Image 1 (tube, rainbow, N blue to C red):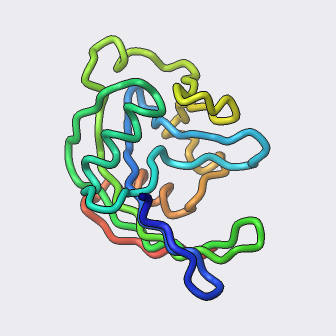
Image 2 (tube, rainbow, N blue to C red):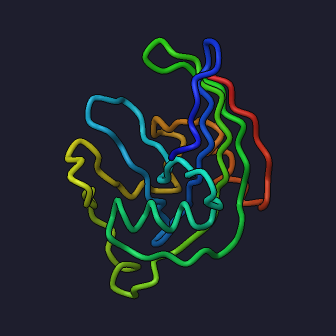
Length: 155
């Protein structure tokens, strides 16, 4: 069971995400119909720790195994989506693919769970300010590279 609850007029989410970098690029996902990119990850399941969550999510979504390098950030994220207010806690790790071949690939990746509407793109770090990214504070985290960090994002 995902840790995601409706409480009064809010939805509370607890998520884990990761920063995977190579060739001066970072891997993000984008859902068809949305006009922004998100850092890859997913909701933590009840009884699951955040490191295991991100490993599970990458395995489920991309069919790849990752190695956690270090803890990077916590984001308290407040936003509206489709008429609903969200309060979200996100635990972010820096990670890399275990397989050396995966580390070299910088093309588009596709969801392995049959979610054809979700694609994964490598975004150039030198142009990170030009991309629409949510939450916005991800850009600051990537540019500052001072880990670990705590950020509050209000959209």
